[in-house]
Each structure stands twice: as C-alpha cells, then as structure tokens.
Image (cartoon, rainbow, N blue to C red; front, side, top):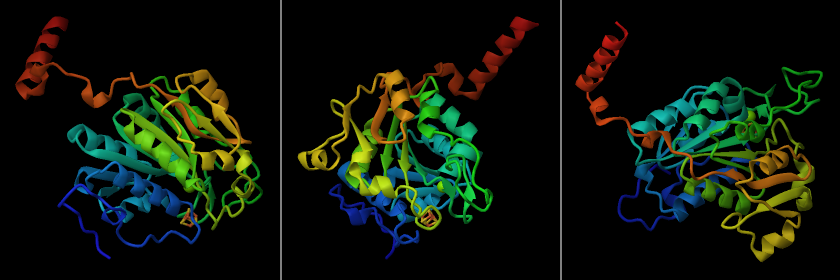
Length: 311
Ligand code: SF4
Ligand code: MG
C-alpha cells in the first residue's frame, strides 16, 4: 500500500494512519504499540497533515515509517531536540517522539533530562525492551543484572537505570506514566491521557523483544495479577472486564510525587498507569518574550543597552 493523506474530512479510520506493513520481528511488542497509537490518532481525530512522529535510531525508531503522518527519522539519541525544533516553530502540530531505551537512556540522556525541564507540549514514548535490538543484542542501561548479551557475555553487572524514577526526579516533570505492550487497552488509555496532557508527557512502555529477550516478561504476561493497575479520577478507565482480568489495583493520586516514586521502584507486581501529573507547569513554547525581542533590531538594541551598563 502507499502512504496517502486523507484531506477530505475528519472522520478518520485506522487506515488513514496506516502505511506500509511493519518490518519488526513477528511477536515484537512494537506492533501492539503501533496499533494503540494509530487508534489514539483516530479517536482524537488527529489530522495526519498536522501530526508528526519523530524518532532516533533503533528498532522502535522505524515508527515514523509506519505512520501515514509527517515524520522525521533522526540520529541516534537525537529525537528530542529534533522534536523540540518542530514544536518551537510549529506549536500547532501534534508532536510525538518515539525512542528506544538505548536511544533515550544512553546516548540521548542529556536531551531527555532537558526535554523534561523545558516541558514542551509533546508526547514522548520510550519503547523499553532492555536491549539494543537493531544492532543485534548489546546491553542497554535498562538491561537486567545477569542479562547475557554480546557486550555482557558473562551477564550484565549493573543495576538497571529506571527511566520513570529518573524522570520523576526532575523538578519540572509534568507527566510520567508506565505501560506494557501486552496490555493494549491499558496502553491505549495511558497514551491518550499523555496526549491530552498539556506539557511534556513521558510514557515508558515495557516492550517484549522475542528476538533477544525472549522470556523477559513471560511471568507477567501469563499472570495478570503480577501487574498493578493505578487508578485515579479521570485516570485509567478500568471497565468491568479489565477489572476482572487485572485484579491488582491501587487508587493513586497522580499529584502525589512521593508515592509516585515509591510505586516507580516496584518490580513485582509491575505498576502500570499514570504515576505523576502536574498540569500547572508552563510549556516552554508559551513562555512570552518581550515583543521588542522579536526583531533583530530589538535584539541589537537590547544587547547595546546591556553593553552600555557594563562599560
Ligand atoms: Fe522487535 Fe527485538 Fe525484533 Fe527489534 S529485534 S524488531 S525489538 S523483536
Ligand atoms: Mg532497546
């Protein structure tokens, strides 16, 4: 099929966001997340021509190729500054950033920390499979202790970095959530809340990589009781059906950052939901600069005046 943009009406269907058939491995968790994101675009009626997906390098970074929207496949670790450039110039666009764990939490770490601090209005999704998949099996910052890989043949020795704990530690964090690729309804709901939040929404999605991390989440996939659903007002919509499947639930106030930090460090059961949300942090692209600074004359007048002050 080809990538056609529907400019005719806003009654979008899934096919309006679909493009070529994804080339991720069979059973890769990325497939389910792609579908959840396409459903979100349809449900939120996002015009494809007003929507941009930005990625870095990695398996998950193929994402923009599979969305029939605008997209930018950037350099390794550099998805965030590219997305910030798009947003500052075109604040009217819906901007999504898709990163992997290597992309975001290793080479892109500096951009990640500052993107949280700048709080631009965009949705950042980290597809965290705990391995470098595209380059065929090297340990990443989120690899588990003991994990065998090409770079850790006797097992990884470091405690993994926890992306949601780190994000919660940045004072300007405005939205932090965790989802799992094998829970499509929950993932869709979390991504929707992230999209509707005004500010920088950070969503870590635990992602299965059957190619290199075949059994990492088997116990959690098989036993829904080992997942902890976080519920809150206007938060995760747990219908009666989901309520029966995922019995382990906790009422959580997403303005409680201390409790969010405790929940974030939980490994078993694994928490999914919105850990933290603060709608009151201004977005960088909306911070006003004085009108006089919008022209080059204004800027040189300002600099001259400052120069006069110090000389
Ligand atoms: Fe997915 Fe792993 Fe295959 Fe990459 S290597 S496409 S992450 S299953
Ligand atoms: Mg990875």
